[in-house]
Image (cartoon, rainbow, N blue to C red; front, side, top):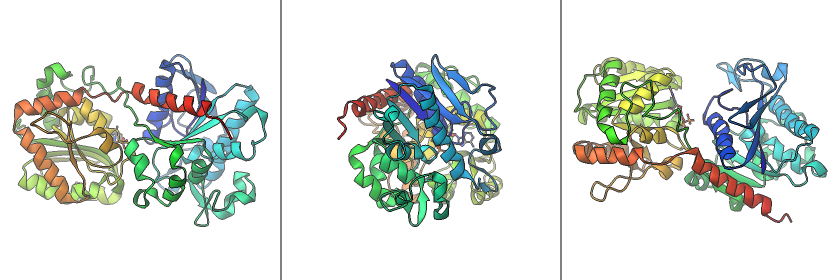
Length: 463
Ligand code: ADP
């Protein structure tokens, strides 16, 4: 089976978010179970390899689409000053060149697996411009939505840049409130749709989460599947992690305390073993529930006596808010407004709990990484968080974290109270840490589910 990945970011070459991790890791996991994958990526300025094609793993080719004017510049989609003005032209070009390149190579392809709005024109082209092209006749398309909040919306007057027939600017096509919506095209024209967790695949069919596309997703409901992302078990491994003070495994969970002390020292917190330490590593954006954290903070710090370490960057309003708090909570709160991989690892390893109160969360990596490091997640029940974290019951030993439902600071504080009651029972807390560390969030599991979907779509009879 031959699958072509089309993605606008891919680790290790270009990354702004979770899509890059998926596009970099999933092909390697598929390779291990006998799927032949090639991937296409724009050759951005940050891609420093000389060649136009390179190999990841044993056989996964990554091919770069080159265009000096479109791709050789700072920022994948934009800079601090805003989105690049010619994004529609840039990603139209990307999609068209991928199809041209496949055809020029005369390579047999079974599936083209497209990711997010930047690759969404490919399924549209295949069902329109290339409809009668024998080369693509049996090729099926799978389209994955990584975050429905990003849709690739452009003004109507640019529609000719897509090179699509005018008739496609309609309610059954790419038209969306009198604008062009590329994601909508991907959702309507692909054979199979997937998103990055089972719960999110249900949520996006509802008005509240649908960003205006819930109706389209309801229509395509029979073809929509949720497959949970994995995490890279090699780069996130507490047993071999050289960044943390004391690497550990489920058998010597006591070493977490050494990591906690190290984190306290590093962040200028009082070195107190008995203080429950809660970590947050997040984009500081409304999506991540940062306003809930801000609203719950006084109760957490002043009533529950926790220590708190935050690491994140994002919206200016949150930068200011947390910088102002640094003074007030000297010794108990540490607010780190920057991107810092090393500190992230120390927080995953040294915290007792990891807080992720997202408003919505397509999949989420933080909660899976924290589980792997024996740090217990406290999450809001939404999207991938609902699929990976369940409430711990100290009586039965079931569950792996703490979960609250209402988007309300009081619900968050009450989940933290439940977590702290377990923290007061060291034997239970160690049991819970071991449960957390034994969870399997490997890419192997996800890859198996994608392969199943590829196999099914290839064997489906086309009518
Ligand atoms: P999203 O992709 O929506 O931002 P995820 O939970 O899927 O959220 O992934 C976020 C990833 O980025 C996690 O691996 C997290 O550790 C990392 N991360 C987020 N902010 C920072 C930061 N300021 N410094 C270091 N790592 C960060």
